[in-house]
Image (cartoon, rainbow, N blue to C red; front, side, top):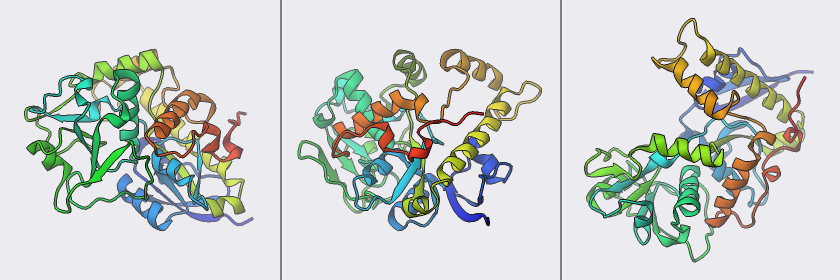
Amino acid sequence: MSKLNLSLACWNYDRTRAIQDGTVQPDGMTINYHDLPVEETFFRMLRHREFDIAEMSLSSYTVSLFRDPKPFIAIPIFPSRFFRHSCIYVNAKSGIRTPKDLIGKKVGVPEFQMTAPVWIRGILDEHYGVPVDSVTYYTGGEEEPGRPEKLALDLPPRIKVQAIGPTQTLSQMLRDGEIDALHTARAPSSYDGKNVVRLFENYGDVERDYFKSTNIFPIMHTIVIRRELYEQNRWMAQALYKAFVAAQEKTYHDLRETAVLKAMLPFLNWEVDQTIKMMGTNYWPYGLEDNMKVLNTFLKYHYDCGLSKRLLKPEDLFATETHESFKI
């Protein structure tokens, strides 16, 4: 049987590099790897379906499941995970000193559907008493004007969202006090630790405490396949899953290496040891079974902020062939 020649758009992560360089090849496939920043991958995939397989915002993918027809199917591979307490920025003159000070404020967000702000809103609501509908959200480009939502949204009236002006940017508005705070994935250029500060400047301690109390390492991105391609080749979901797991295992091995440092972090071995003590040896888990709690939490947050029309279950997200992990 001839192999499928497929395009894959994904950023250049250590955990996917073995697929990028061909060291790991999915059974039955030849992969043409497009190393692209996530914003470009998401835009091109959501708007134009340009790739056969792509890294995808978990939130945007979940929104797409309410489209007819559904454009994608995901596999439980998570190339991006991130604790997001560090990603809440505030104008120092806004009077915001604690999370509850956000209530009633103007909060910028590049896109309301972005995965990072979904987690931020949910965490602020559940753990700090800041209801999702207690602020007004302003959407638009963080550093350059004119960033629309990648997918059209139909939010309930209780969620207050409005676009900023065509020449405005969220970074500038935060600096000038036109908005009080910003939920984002990338640090704004106006962040200087004086006029613009983090809500949690000690975010390392806060994020570790969050994990210790919840056992949640937030998922940001997953891997999607164009649904029509998957329907014609159902076997490919499991083959891709196995390949991503194999590529990740190479990175786990590299990070455990003690003869040399394979990443440019002077205290890498110490960091790995501390991470394993806190999170276990499989500290970046793939698969459905090992991620049920984090996925259920995300899906609740997604529903609570009006992005999901009904509360989904983790099983609803992924190809049925990947619901069980195959182990030799």
